[in-house]
Image 1: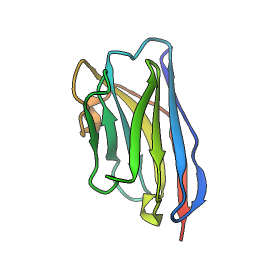
Image 2: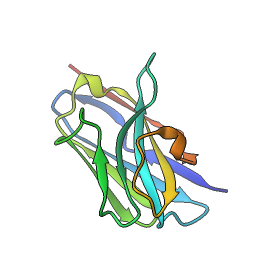
Image 3: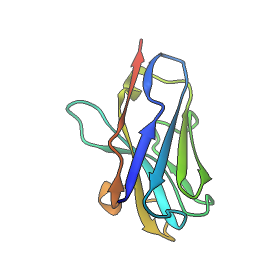
Image 4: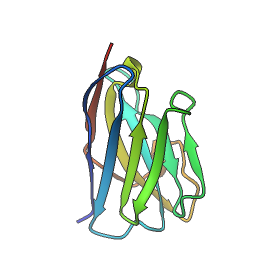
Length: 124
């Protein structure tokens, strides 16, 4: 059974930091692009960051560039370091696995497996 499990969410004050982790199990995702998305109440799910299988290609949403850093810790673990958090970063954050040997897509439809999400709340 394939599972993606996010962890590391929580409540933090504006300007603070959190580190999200995504652990995959059930198969190896070393050849897949991996992505982070988020969804705030009443809004559509949006792309945050993605990384290709080798780590050589990384994309960020404009809203998080310079503040968030994605990394592949190993074949089945991806992290998202979030610094200088803002209240508008408040959302449920999801990790997802994308296509093999492809650049990370920004469209959520390009991702096959999803985690259950972890809540990030940034207070002002």
